[in-house]
Length: 177
Image 1 (cartoon, rainbow, N blue to C red):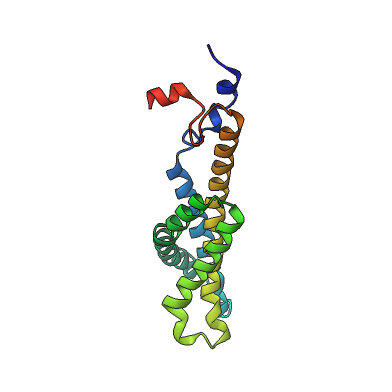
Image 2 (cartoon, rainbow, N blue to C red; image 1 turned 30 degrees about the vertical axis):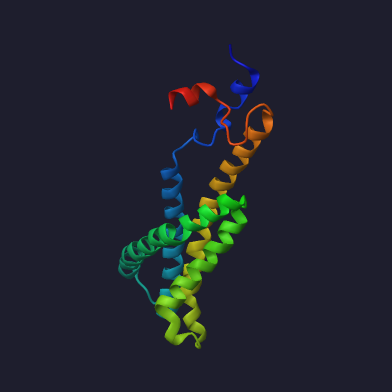
């Protein structure tokens, strides 16, 4: 016998989503890498006086893409995942919070690692600004998914007052998995 609640709210279970969490991790990595690479290409073009040809742009995409992707994945693991844990525990998983913290982290990582000796010069802010854009876009993508999952879980817990807090709505799923 199927109840109306279990039929209507199976998709509300956060473990059962349209795509696995590694997909969202990869999509966030992709957003950060693409935006960060584009921002660094613009910085390089400004630095070169917009005198780049197609060969330089292709080499820049390969070079910057590799390093932006590397810094993005390392930042996601060592900065983003601990932030996700803290926001999940405190109940503040919001895309705006994630994206703001991602922009701050992206700016800070590049400012500290590469631009600290030159921070007095105005052009020294271009590279950390590219990091802020990469961090913002990566964290925004991750935050949109985390916020949706958190809201979905809250709605599922609020729908059935007979269920204890934290209990999933689909009892068959609990038996199988």
